[in-house]
Image 1 (tube, rainbow, N blue to C red):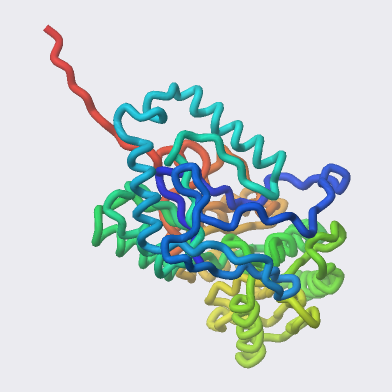
Image 2 (image 1 turned 30 degrees about the horizontal axis):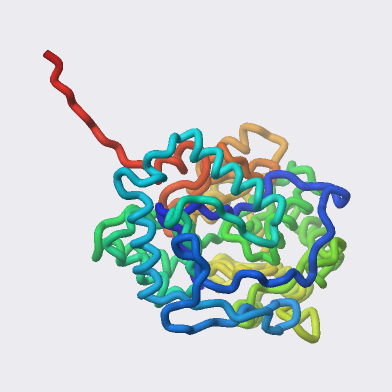
Length: 407
């Protein structure tokens, strides 16, 4: 399944939080929320798909079906796009609405999401917000090639990003922003604070079960601290708590689905087969659900599959380097360029490395730190355009020149 957002709907927030909250500030999780909405949302109405088809939503912790959700297809996309066009027509309530009032509505929606995080509430004019659960080859493809969609944003794989660009080029040349895959380098210099670097590298890779586009999956460690870093990283991975995602003591839950679960296990097998040293983990972590043990590979070489391809799972790869020039060259030797990290106490070294890295975001002595005013996006095959900051707003605007002759 792919998730798409076009100019008729609100942008999806998918970044990890910028700060960590205390356990006391986290509300008690609802392990079995009532399912109120399992249909399409078009023109402020919940309705079945035109085809009547549905698809199952699976609980990845148990493998059990939570509910069946309406599956949008081409006919539903056409209906939703028409509703959006009507909502944005000249003279419509949304177009006549003062910008400050629009802002209040959007803030009201944000407040409702925070208050009722298990459910989505909307209060916009008809057609402004439409929600179409569906599959990439049908609903996603129909959106990408639709002649009445002016802007499309996609977060997902580089392979699907290529298809979306092609669909835009063969249809109406719609604006497209893409936040795609990554194989982000995290560089640990010999003068780094070891304890902090180990913990930050652990978080940067294992966050969200490793299912994070900017995961620091290629960890380059300077030779003279390599053995100690590997030892500490293995010890930390072994202490990682895997289990029920509704338990606040749990650090790692299940992978998103069976397909991704199998794919990750396949990459682990590839790493062992190609000669990487499995330091810990590498197997299934529970007798049901899609749980995988936190896995650490040492002695990883740049040409190995696990060092080249995005795994999107809890698999850490640790490589050794000697000089700054060497590590910058090796870090850039990838088709991706979403993010990177560098750990050092020397600001000159940090500046040298960050300037040399071809990545949209470089973190120094931290990882996965985000702010709404800081643009986020990728170089190369990690996508185009930016989310957040003024650059993010620019993607949703058009420049118009009006020239008036005054006598």
